[in-house]
Image 1 (cartoon, rainbow, N blue to C red):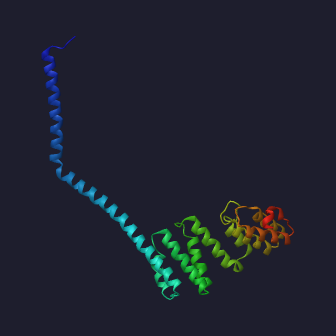
Image 2 (spheres, rainbow, N blue to C red):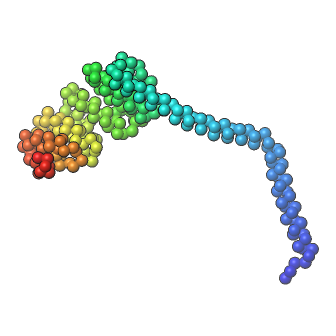
Length: 234
């Protein structure tokens, strides 16, 4: 049933009134809270601008540090080694993990070049124990530190330290496995050491030259691992 004309007019009028009231409320809200809204807008723009500035600052800072690191390498290449320690200092405490790691590895390498194995070992240890560093950096540093300290460590210390790396699925299995096997030999566990060398020989992810060496050492320990190598590598 169609609504009477008066009813239709009333409904139309009510809708217009409702819309006008809503517009007035919005207008009143902005009028009454104008200062607060402007302050909020300024705060938002300042925060957003600050974040953008900080991100760009970090990028610029990282770029400058990479350039400084490149200068260090140039100085090393030009045999200007006396300048390097001072240049590395700020980079070794960089907020960039890659820059910091590169600087510390460079410091350790330079220490070895200058026959300062103590400083090299300490530097590698600092990298290995830095939980903020990516794990591959820490693993590489731990392996190098253990290589330097091998003769000073007790066999059980070597085995314990390298346990996470001396696993078949580790990228460092070859080198860590060799040192672990050598530590086993120091303990008089020659058969266990021979089996460790055989495991290295059988691992296809290990370089062939290392696998061939492992076969030879395993053989001297009474373990025949020759079948692990392809004929071309024997």
